[in-house]
Amino acid sequence: MTDGGPGRDPDVGDPVCWLDHVCPECSAFNDDPGSPCWRCGITTAGDATG
Image: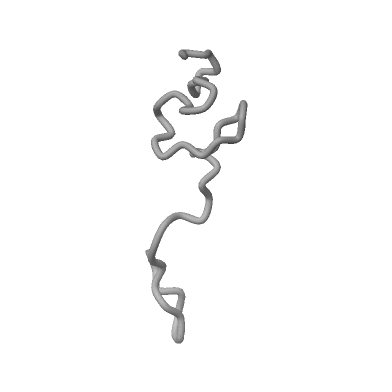
C-alpha cells in the first residue's frame, strides 16, 4: 500500500467493508464468512444447513 502522500498516515487496521461477514438471509454478523450462519444456518451457497 502507498503512504498516501506527504502528511498522511499509512493505511492500517481492518478493511472498511465487512459486508462479506453479513448473512444475506438474516443480517447476522458472522466472524467466519466461509462457515454457515450461526443464526439461520444459511451458507454462502444459499442453502440451510441447520
